Length: 507
Ligand SMILES: Nc1ncnc2c1ncn2[C@@H]1O[C@H](COP(=O)(O)OP(=O)(O)O)[C@@H](O)[C@H]1O
Ligand SMILES: [Mg+2]
Image (cartoon, rainbow, N blue to C red; front, side, top):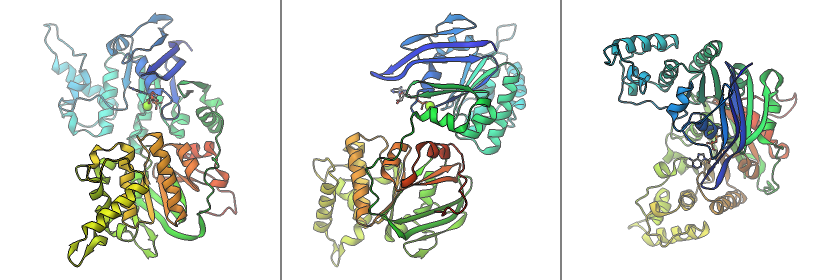
């Protein structure tokens, strides 16, 4: 198979931190190449370099055997390289046809813009892609899947030879993914190469011819799909397999006491029949990709969203909580993913935020007992080592890690003993992370239980007694601390369901 593009020794650093260390990549004419790697492996950076959107610090690129250098995206497009970015590049206030021809407008023989011809061509291309809206519709009225088709139509008007698709299925529904597969197969049959970035095993193994694996900004493997197993792929992504850290002894876990049990939780389109069991003193981790349904799941447990079906039994009562207030009153609290939007009131003081959920406890016969409230807030802030000047300081002035501690203090102050923590360590520094890990453990020592969502698998391995993998709204695997296996957990996250050996207890 002849090679279309050859990249050699590509290096890229951001503010001194290496994102790519001498990566090589070949793309053959008409192939569908899976580019695979954990988050942060360097996939998007490498693609931006191939698309001329970012210059490499070092390395060479050749097309059809001749060296090229891209100063800007247009240079790469002139060689037939187009990209459908993760964050789509549609202009919302322009029509579909204007978006399709943006940057490559067609003129007629009088040198005037030829809208009739562009409308006809856009309509023809889009209909072959399964697009049913009008070419005159404004882009901001389209669904994500339709916008993606507009992006693909753009690439087809430009004599593309390589189309880069960066996680194109991350926000598509099942039928939309099927349609995209058809398009990918058609482009490939026409000799157009595709680089397809995805974390879903079924997509890699169904649609791709070959896989290139990146790990920590370097090449970690390369194989034709027919000769690759799921296990080999994941081993290349992760390197040596990492087992559980000994930090967590699990001494707080009381196996026999179930504090929360969910059966068949369903909410279309995100969740399909989720079963979960949480025990006293347990840290239960939920691993999954964007779109797996992790946040949706904890929001339902917290009464923030209704479920379509399923049952919940928590704190000795049966039934979903009707509202977050009802959940909090029962001792179940959520630290949301979006702590600035939902977890905290930024202009209010630290003290006010901490006592927000527990005001009822400070109300005496003569109204709010302000002395009580302040001393409680002081104790909690000290316990969590919130770095602050005074409790009267606005929460919005604190660092991310300290804001997260205030969220947790608020839940502790409200007397919660089932904690739902959605990405509690995202975007915070290592010191604050360690403090939050210590806090999670000390909470379980006192009999609390925690459901922890984290995109960082090594964090889950370190903290949890149990890890449940969620993929597209279904539980694929459940692992106990005694048999944690990073490869198996990653496979579960990427969609491989476990085949429970006969006789094995179901969690
Ligand atoms: N514009 C940027 N500024 C600083 N760091 C960046 C930038 N883009 C990417 N990085 C860093 O480069 C590394 C690779 O990121 P990326 O290419 O996005 O990985 P992937 O797409 O495989 O998840 C990460 O450590 C990321 O934080
Ligand atoms: Mg990326």
